[in-house]
Amino acid sequence: MVLLPLLITASMDVERVLAVVNGVPILVSDVDLAEAAVLVPRQTGEDDAGYRQTVVSALLDLELRWQDLTAAGIAPRVQTDLDVAWRATVQRAGGEEALRRRLEQIGLGERELRELVRHAAVVQAYVASRFAPFVRPTPQEIETAWRQELMPQLEKAGKHVPPLDDVRGEVEALLRERKLSAEIERWTSDLAKRAEIVRYPPATGGDASVPPAAATRASSPPPATPRN
Image 1 (tube, rainbow, N blue to C red):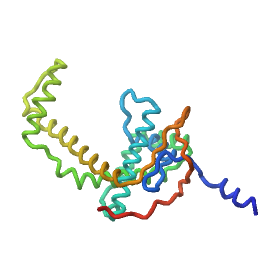
Image 2 (tube, helix red, strand yellow):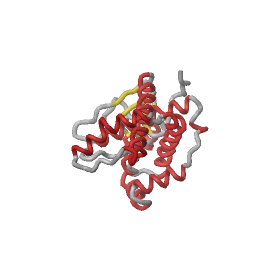
Image 3 (cartoon, helix red, strand yellow):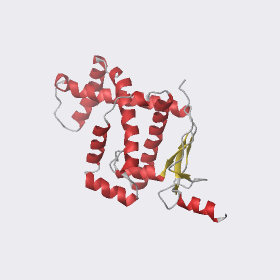
Image 4 (tube, helix red, strand yellow):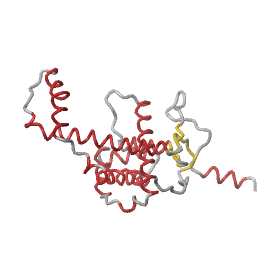
């Protein structure tokens, strides 16, 4: 009788928690998956510890957005091509063989990664339909950005400065991207203010945090709470 609980515990895939978002844990394996598939861009000069924390932040934000779309009943209705998203993931990881080896190294399978990719693809598709159509910069904003920021940068670097009309499309695309990023940040920040978030500091001498309790990959998310 005493051995039964011990056997059950031993068979569970218990791992450390790096953060908790409204009761849903972000696990070490989640970060390992994101790193293996290069789901989060790595900045030039960013060391391993810094990059790992960047990935944790990105997964925390993704979980916030996913929970919001799920709570509102939007996630199942978002149109997205998961095959395209998966092919992009495989390509970013260096091909099928390279991705397979990385997953083998961390002891995780394709199924878990596909689920993470699905969440990211749904959120990305929602952003494209909800925010992207409304972030077009005005002609004045394009003119101001060119004269006050971009043109001086070219002049300082000693590069050729073309007429604005020759690069208007590129400047507009840049400002669109900035505006879209600002909208996403505003949305995520609002969600974070209303959420219960716990983020554990990195452990000294290791790449994972040591929370007061561990969790299993089978942990269930809390009931969804509708958006205000």
